[in-house]
Length: 289
Image (spheres, one colour):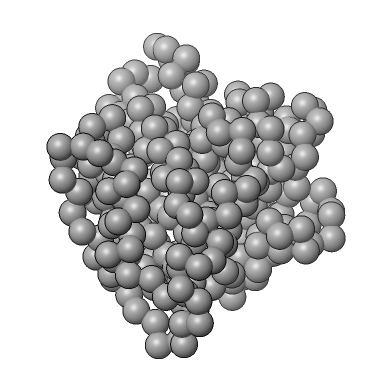
């Protein structure tokens, strides 16, 4: 089941989606109770809305269990790369509570998206929110960033040393390289970041996971298709090599011939492998394809 909820960051109301495994009994009222415990603010948060329901028998009440969580950092900006509801359902089916912030300035959230600027606080606070919930096993909160979400995911994992594991799926490694490679994104990047890499490289480097690899402390999984037309495959390769150079615990799931988004059957297989890796149920290969 999926709930839409709002939470507070820097006095902005930020929207997000919370997915609960179908076998768990939960309600909007229970979620709202815990939101109000965390946020004592004059800004009234709206009651969460239940967006999807389950016909599966609910065998456990949410306040009697502790289960792991996945923070899902969406890709894109605005209406491009919105949180994927089907992904939330798929991830939750592995027995995880999944939370996906929309980032400030997106999908009705207040503020302005800065593509890894101040919006990083939206994902950092999302992690803190998950950590505060009594039904979350807070030693097992992992973070997955898809595409641009790799920026926010990496920033959050570095800021929070209790991150369990980090997954970067079709992830941007260097924002300056994306500026060079994706001509159609240059106007948006200049508008959102405030400059071009030719004029000022610093804000591009500060948003680039490849510049942060030394600070990553948790096991990291890179998932990338070799024919990715939106975030070219070399982003994943170079990030993997840089993490190896720093002697980090890193694995690479390479999907030969596949683009930015995988066909459904392969996507579901990639999910299965990802959760097997998170749960330490996958043979430890550095590169898995």
